[in-house]
Image (cartoon, rainbow, N blue to C red; front, side, top):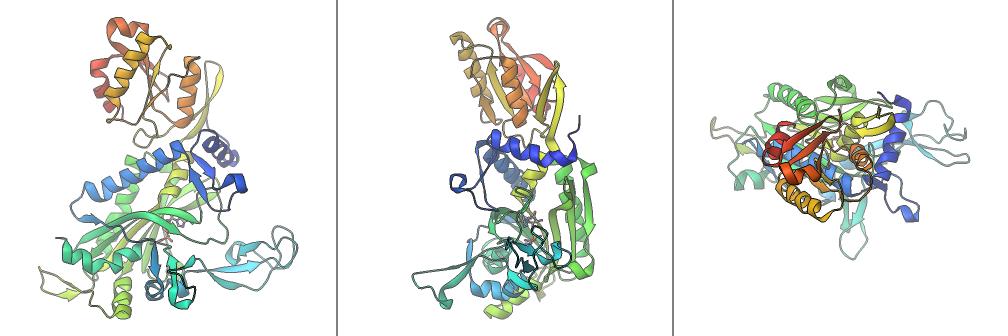
Length: 437
Ligand code: GAP
């Protein structure tokens, strides 16, 4: 059954609150627009996304290494990278009743879409959050919360090549918080002001960018469909026309998803050439060139960069997975999440609270823990209700321990999507579950 597209976001937002995935930040004080907290299942889902990204971008490769740079970086970094002047959005403010601020490219005409009041002239608004380092608050102590993690990779480029055995082509990957004072945050966690970026700078020989650019476009698309299980029909690639490229890029492809509010960017893959290393070399007066041991040439490598936020993947996964159907004449809400990302992969549910059942259920739990993300659910009552709760958080498998288990050392695996139940020996359980992934 498919949920009407115009109700999908609303339903997903309600589910994430109800089941402890996402809460508005500082809600008891009224919340802050563009900031969200992640509850227990949200944390598990985020961690799964992050771990899968790291696994496929770093651990399963031998040409990418990791980095963690600071969230606050000095003004010089952002002056050199161009963010101080170019990381801006055009802003218009309502001069009428509501005083709301709008992105100029999101409104047509000269009237406020909310209250109909007149709109101000367009001015450029820098999206970076400014702060001060140390006890004095003057221009010499100014610094910025990073709007992207990428600059850390460029600023530390020399440290990485001098201290590790990487050779071009190679990548530096980083996962961490980024901050953007978005004028109009919205669509839940699709566009927020604090989010978690996952970026990889892949350094290649100058002018040898087309092949790796194409490789990363395809590789990233493959990851979404094969590893995260996103519906390929709702994904497409969008190649930016030259005039809409960021200030650092010569070619960019977005992997787009068909959101309920229209096609939107899920991930960007940008060809940044040697723009960043060059500007940092110029501004810092440090030699950032790389001596290629194969050609004996010195050069600034060019860069291909896949970049995406955990938050945007998370909302995409939830929208893609949300479904409603009818089981045993009762309506059911479920998340058809791929087992790779499900916050709980296996739930162990003893049929009753009888001590002898609980003992075995706890043994099954310890057998599975460490191998899968496991939840133990003994909250008495109807087993059907417990299944429904697991369906709603996207748990692909429930393991039921019943009185027969005491005789036959077997349990029931109940599958989320089909609700099919099969009996399996406890000794075979791990292998059977693994095969279901
Ligand atoms: N270093 C390149 C860069 O930051 P970007 O297109 O501005 O490029 C990369 O951002 C990705 O970060 C986007 O594709 C999206 O997944 C995510 N992203 C950007 N702004 C976001 C926001 N305000 N909230 C959540 N995710 C965001």
